[in-house]
Length: 251
Image 1 (tube, rainbow, N blue to C red):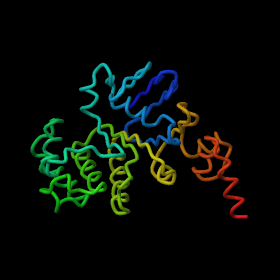
Image 2: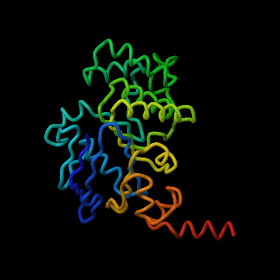
Image 3: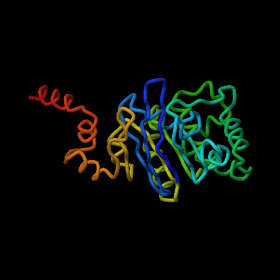
């Protein structure tokens, strides 16, 4: 469903993403991990058609995101780390706006729209202006609108930021159910424990390069480590000094 084919992104002399190739299938949750500045956000922006790669190509469900963006975006959902919403709309007006934008029929708007607003505990806020929402509520509204559409491909950038424990648990359950129903899910996160719990496969990007990819077990094998994903991540990204400092403090 997602094919990233040798993409490179340069900013002047700086290479933010260096010859990255990845494939993510339907019915899979794929984790995209890396330290700050590793190239995660640039990769996601190119996947969404918000930024043009210097070279290489990205296709979503067989549609090139640069050459045929409308076809690609019809099947693509996106949840950024900071929700960008029209704050002068009410929650329901926003849902209707998204439904109109993506061609969701009135029946699905009424049934799925209201269903997910209730699931994400926004049923009592349906007629409230978005500008009065907290960050977490805006994130839940964004999620409600995306799941109302039921996209074939879903890209999430730090989706748990701003969610309380109930909302985070709920999102995890919905993502697993959506994966089991065939959705292709690409998730960037800093929370390694969540990635290990949720993702079928993962890739670690560091300084613009994908340095490891596979299942959690395959990542351990590539890192020659039997530890948890955090230890594997630190080993692969040069963070062993942190492990040594912690050992000294504990000693």
